[in-house]
Image (tube, rainbow, N blue to C red; front, side, top):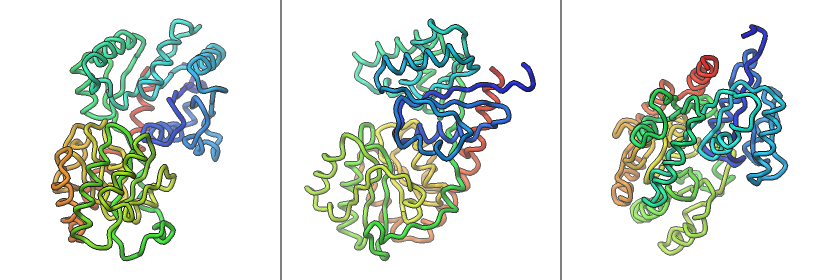
Length: 372
């Protein structure tokens, strides 16, 4: 390769919504060495995830005119046949699906990297799961490298044999750690929270596989045993109205704030005393890593992806899925023990700094791009 020629990278994102996958993708796009790489980032429509690029000219932003499958494929096909891209990096199953469809119609064959943010089809009913796994396996012949962001995802990929093991690589998701512990604290009054209130936060999409209902039931127990506490639910999704009704039915609605999607997560974490993620499965649990970066103790369900990052009793607590009593017990233990919260927060910060930094992730992807 000519030493003056930059390697052209096209990152394909499945949406422009706020979420863990887009956060990781944007951190990667912004952090790649622009002396070595020319970076294009594609989104099927405009949305909050692209705001970061409006402040920078380092990444070339691409969006299709319409957010339907035909328009997306046509836009990508025209772009790829007009521009010689060295590496296409598909973020997630949907983005990889678009790229794999286009492969037979491209004038030149770029290398294809596919980051699998979670093998969710493995958790579907039998009659859906196996046809989709078969389709995934057949179409993955176009993939040069499949990236797993956690050991739990890697084990599922190897179990269902959706691609040759030689093409599988583990690269942990990385977060901008300094963005969480150097942030100025949010004024609680801006959220109409009294300064003497303890704050429990749950940050996730309000859909399956997240189990916010158990958090609400645990919080009901907390309210009966601990005064001056409030629960923040950050995120949006199809279960919002159902969860709001559940909060009303069990009598905690006045102490639960449904804040929707927020772009000030570091500030939210700055006023949080405890952060919870209750899921039936996870690829990794990005909100927990962000909480650890903010030096906050965490509570999560004892499932693949979460138990990979929570060391029970060290940087947080693991509880069995659906166990509202144990969750409430863990919350009360932390609420009543400031020193324990501080110790777990420090342990979590050390753990995430050593294993899940943005810089480490970017370096591993840069080496992978160049090796291809």
